[in-house]
Every structure is written in C-alpha cells, then in structure tokens.
Amino acid sequence: MDMKMKQPSIAERMDRTGTETAFEVFAMAKEIEKTGAKVTHFEMGEPDFDTPENIKNAASKALSNGYTHYTAAPGLLELRQAIAEYVSEDVGVDINPEKEVMVMPGAKPGLFTGILATANAGDEVIMPNPAFPIYESVTNLVRAKPVPIPLKEENEFRLSPADVRKKVTKKTKLLILNTPHNPCGSSLMKNEMEEIAEIAEEHNLWVMSDEIYSKIIYEGQHYSMLSIPRMRERTIMIHGFSKTYAMTGWRLGYAIGDAKVIANMTRLQVNIASCAAAFSQIAGIEALRGPQDAVSMMAAEYRKRRDAIVRALNSIKGLTCKTPTGAFYVFPNIRKTGMKSKDLMLHLLNKAHVAVVHGTAFGKYGEGYLRFSYATSLDNIKVGMEKVKAAVEELV
Image (cartoon, rainbow, N blue to C red; front, top):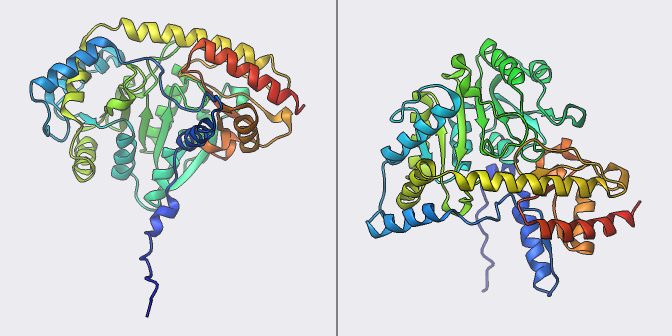
C-alpha cells in the first residue's frame, strides 16, 4: 500500500522572519531577461565598481601565503588593529582592538548578533521606518517588539529625536539608527545625534548605529554616535567594507562596542559562522591602510549619478524626489500616480523593464515611494529614466 509521507513542520519562528526584497526583485528581473528583454537595474544596493586592484592583489598574495584556514573568532588581530585605528581617527576616541572590535562575514551578522545579544523577548526596539528590513526581521525573530518611527519627507527623511522620545517606554531596550540612511539617503545632523544620545542615556538604552554608508556622503559630514564620549558603553557601531570599497562579495564587516557586548556577539558568531574568511581579512587590512583614492573617486561619481537621477525623476509628471545627502539611493514620492508602491514597481518591471524596489519593502511608512539605487552608470540612468518617464506618464 502506498502511503504518502507526512513532512515534519517548519519552525514557527520562520513565520516571523522577513527577507530583503531587493534580491526577490532581482530574481524577477533575471526571469524577464531570460526572454531576451533588457532590464535596467536600480534594485540592488551594490556598487557597480570593481574592488580596487591593491585590495585584490593583497587577497591573492594572502591565498598564496596560506591564509586559507580559520582565524580567531573575533578576527585577525592585525585587522582589528587597523579597524580600531581607522575608526578612532574618524570618531576621535580610542578603541581597544582586542576587546572592542569584532570582524564578521559581512555587516548583517553584526545586526543579527547585536540584536540577539541585547534584546529579550518582550523588549521594545525603536527603529526608523522605512528602513533596512533586516532590523525588523531579526527583532521579530527574537520575539522583541519593533517600534517604528516614521521618517517624514517634510523632515528630509531624518529620524526626529522628538518622535523617538514619544515612543520610549519602560520596555524599550534598543534603539537602531542608520546614517546615511537606506532607503532614503538622509543623514542625521550633529544636534540630532546629541539629542538622541541624551534620550538613550536617560532611559538606559542600547544604541545600534548602522554606519555602513559613512564614506558616501555629499553634504555636510558624517556624525557617529561613538563620537559622543558618554555613549561609548551603550553604542554598537555596525560597519563594513562592502559599500566603501566595492567589496560586497568578499563578505567582510565589523562591529565596535563595549567589551562585554562584543564578547557576547563573538560567542554568537562562533555558533553561526566561526569567523570571516582569512584571505578576506588580509584584503581588509590593505583596504584600510592602503591608498584611499578609489573611495574618493567612487563617492565623486555617485554624486554625479545622484544629481542626474534626481533631476530626471523630478522631470517626470507624477513623481517628486528629494536630493539625498548620503548613500546611493533616491526615494521618490509616487503618490500622484494614484498607484500603490508595489503595483507601480510591478508596472515598471513588467511594462518598462525597469527594476526598482517598492517602498513598503522597507516598512509600512514606505507606502507612496519607490527606492532606486543609483549604483549604476550614468548611461544606465539615462536609459532607465527614459523608460520610467514613458511608463509613468501614461498613468497620470
């Protein structure tokens, strides 16, 4: 007798775990390209530049020299020293490379281990919305409660300290910041950082500061929560090499924080990934200590692209777009089209063969917006914007 085997159930926690929609849109675009159509890609937050040659050469030499084995879980000490020196120069504080720095296979593990190490079930985690979706996903995974703070277009999409203060309760444990910001391209100002620091200190909160785009800034300067001295013991900085050095595939990031939280995040890393790849870590040393010309060149090119895409979007009937101050994203308002964000995203993908991400992929307050990544060439921006213009203006 044939008996249909019953499959065991998947853990219920997976129902609370989100994803990063940009990868899903990318997969949809690739299916369209299989038909022979040409898709213009604005969905992925990935530099289109190649990793600088000096960094690749350092990795190649490392492989030849046998850096193909495990390292210490928090990373090679020489890389942690390079990170401590690099960040110390930026934020103006001394960082202990042995106890306050952890190297990871990408920045996402820092978000994951940082939230796991600080937030209990039932705790509240304040975060911007729209925002990088992994913040909310991991918070839900640990059964903490995400508390979204709407980023308002009239405030240039910056997190309002006054709004943060209104949301703090006795259950608040962690506050997540992202500056420069994904998906809006906004950057917090010094006085805003200081006011948020006062709130965190007053209510004894952890602050996770995602600063992955700190070297891609166009107006003003980047301010780090670590630069506020009294915040050293409660701040976890998340950073990495992917955006600054066009090293997304190298999977190399780092966290900086108080020795106790870094030790616990490292213990979680031992359970998850052991360590980052040894040869990637050697490449990271070269990235930080080698020439920085490529970083400046990429930032200058992103500025040109930003100006071109903002100008083009604002010329399209039905769309308006703020000028971002950092990162490589624009977040245009599409409400005058009369369409929901996801519907317009699908319309652009299927009708115009332009891949973007709908605003609600970054949270409910992203409704009425789309995210375009301008980490692509000026030629692609020109072609893509012509297609967007034709597809949108037939709707309005």
